[in-house]
Image 1 (tube, helix red, strand yellow):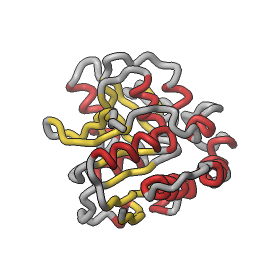
Image 2 (cartoon, helix red, strand yellow):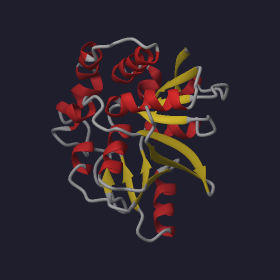
Image 3 (cartoon, rainbow, N blue to C red):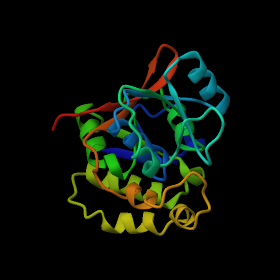
Image 4 (tube, one colour):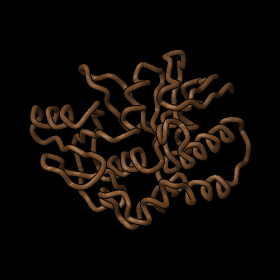
Length: 226
């Protein structure tokens, strides 16, 4: 399978199949949102759009990066989301990098969002879709985030059919600047377990697929066969 890795600025619309990676923390958080029972995640371009979508749909919840803020119900933390019952809810998500990358590739078919927590299911989903070329979009640090690059390379190896020990890739993510920032408390809206939750390989058996629904970009769990 042909693969390439780009940052968000490198998305040019030529990739027919895309996997957007944000390990710490957007798409680990998203996976936990689904695990806690949410039906779907609507991806917002900015905070104002997130609040507008919430205001127009009673019962929807809004999630953002950073410290708790007026109008937002959740923060971008898998450890905090893990403690929340979201059964049947729609969550509007806006983060600094992950949702930006997802919106950039929403027209790809398929377009998936991923982290280590859904790595195996993501590979199975790509196989089920018959993908023969994949663009990995590394969202953190304009495509330089160590944890996202490690995850992209791990997925590449799995797609090549290799038997891969994830240990070396997890070590790169665990020692990344993003992980250091979380452990040191330099990122607000965090839980002490966030780093380790972001490094749980195959915690969930679903992939996460983006599509257009009624004019909005929507992320839903996808349970590929195989």
